[in-house]
Length: 190
Image (cartoon, rainbow, N blue to C red; front, side, top):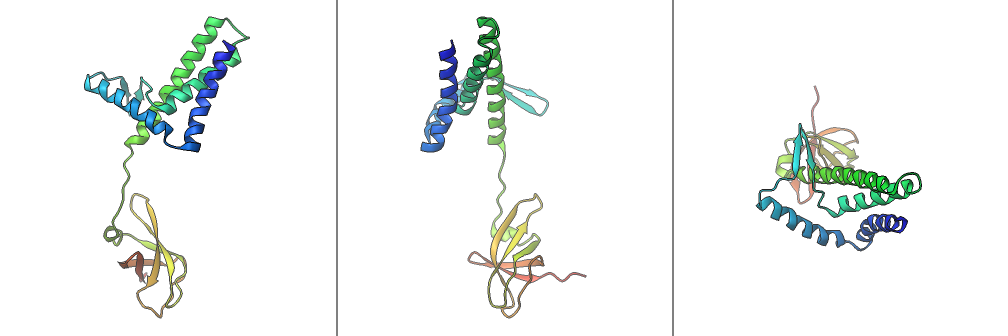
């Protein structure tokens, strides 16, 4: 059984490592698992549980969750192999591996549901901006625009008045964009 635990650990660690080095290995396998998940959803078999605002995926169908489960199974099995009964060792390793796989799959599911908000340049004209790198007279600097939901975007910037420089940390208003350069003016503070 010691050899089986070692193989599980190597597979659980090796597949993500190979995917990191070679790329797209896990994408192909995940596509297969997504097909199985879609088939189960098509049959109206729901293997997910909602507990309050927490979503648990009881069938961990992703390469990451399966590899994490294999890694935990192998590691726990290797730790317990000489300390307890062989059957008890396997049961504990399987239960802990399954719990870790469920947690990883639930995190993956939650991360896939996160929406990304992007703003067009026209929408960014509505938000406050601050000079990050000083704009020298007739030259360029950079401006940072922060939206209400905390998204910060930086652009190269130029003063609307070519002979005027704007110092770092000055609040400015973006008037318009000239290609990818923000044309800014100082905000008059009262």
